Image (tube, rainbow, N blue to C red; front, side, top):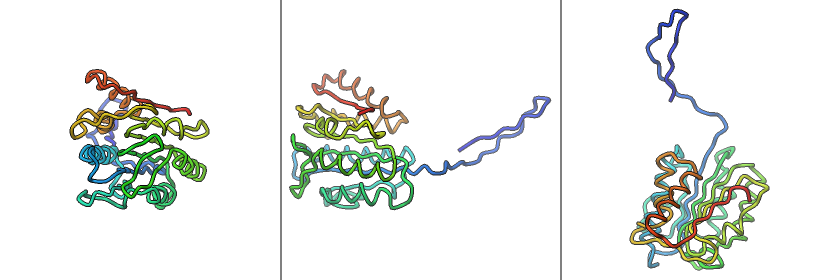
Length: 231
């Protein structure tokens, strides 16, 4: 939305006129991948954080049709597909670009993690190696910017395993490669709560990351949040 005023040579100003400007060629999408099942002990937190991420993306002008939500929770609202390895691959390589030129894609991975990767409800493992292969293919084909946020135990494996200086790929994780994450009750002390709340307010990825770090320091959360923006 743009407000336009006209001023003449004598300094008189017209009444304001409101108009709308659409930036051509900017198509942003997001994927929220909630790994695990409703029986997992931290599932309440995973679901709340997934909803918070979707809400933050919508406030950043990514419409409902441009947010793909993958989850195995039968009671969750707005789920587009199960959270399996195959469905994540399809979302990255097919869905992300089925509506035309893709300028940027945000991917939030949250749920049950192991040193090998994210554990899906059906037993699939989304490994850093698998994910990197899909991300490389997507960026080679589209040239889009990628923003990856991983929140799980051992999430740092996705930073070391997926970083690549050949692409514009910013990766943020809630732990180092050898740490477990802290969700807290209903995600109250989770990295994602602070991070996505800052994104929803309009902060950049880097600024939201610093907000999360400061909040963790105040709450004395003993995990190492990581960010890589150049491979």
